[in-house]
Image (cartoon, rainbow over all chains, first blue to last red; front, top):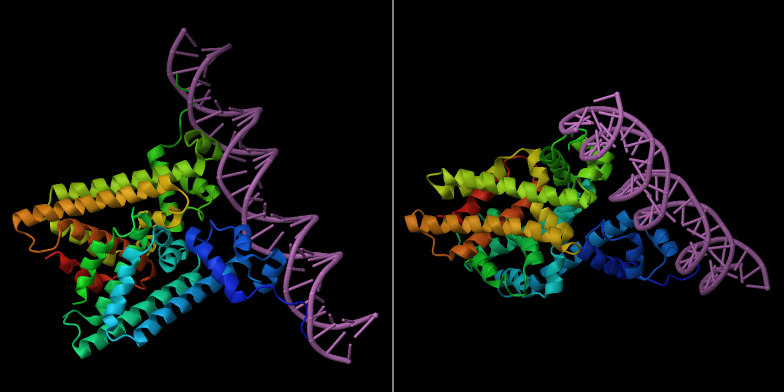
Length: 194
Length: 194
DNA sequence: ATCATTATGTACCAAACGGTACATAATAGG
DNA sequence: CCTATTATGTACCGTTTGGTACATAATGAT
């Protein structure tokens, strides 16, 4: 039944590859570098990921998406004031370290990179953003019901707007000189959630 | 003094290269493809652009930046209501064709691509956005003086915010299904300029 | 112990990449 | 018309790329 044992777990090496892709982008991360980062050899890699680098990136995208969405949903599930959780999501961009900020948003980056040449990957990234938008939407709707929010804007548009700002900040954060410099901007931007 | 005549103008081929870079990004545009798009051979190319592909891209960035900023400044110079010009800039994203939209924002894209590996190119793109932001800033200040604008937000922050939205829309437009679908969102976003 | 099975590391490879070398062509000046 | 000068096209090249082939190692089952 079972031969030589694996020396790695897929989830783990996908995570390590994610860090590199996130930092350097797809093309600029060579397979060699990725193997070093993942700590496995070519033999193991191409056995586990028959589709090579592209399949790896696809798995990275879905894994990161799943993880980020779960993390957010978990936080929302136990929160008294869900809107504050969303706001904190944005505030954290302002507070994050320089290294974290230089990574920007993996999904925005992916769309920029691939929208002209790989529909499948673009769709995965687009879907992530759509799901994030849907979460924003639901939070806004519930907050309106509870009277925690007194905006007169269309909740769906408001959610779209937040995604726009999210993606925009994903670029701004990459070129913001110091950690914290985006905070005043973000605070202003969050006034749409009053 | 002068030998064999050139069969191309630098400005012209830089423009043609820009279209390809803009559509496909830096890495995905091979030198071969670029040469075809520009309509010149390797000999001419490497004579005119000693720095090769990278120098070409740098010239593309500066050329597009210069052109776009000039166009905007010219429009502002003859406008009665400058704020409307800025608003139209955003509205045009909503109205643009699918092909135009798929190009997204060259400068945002460049930052995403290069911020982790090429400071010089990143800076050119960042500078463009800063100049755009400065234009927004000035327009807002003047509109406030003239009483054309009655916002209580800090003009500098407002300009930063507009750049954020600009960059965010640069991503959204790449995945928006149909032309025009972003317009309601953009109209809502422009309410910060009241 | 041997065998089937699965994983690993290494040697190897074809293709594409960006870039160079160089022979040749077209102009202006003398 | 010859020469200096500049531009062009083509043949070529070294590297790097992502990827494959294969011999070998480690396990469970019999």
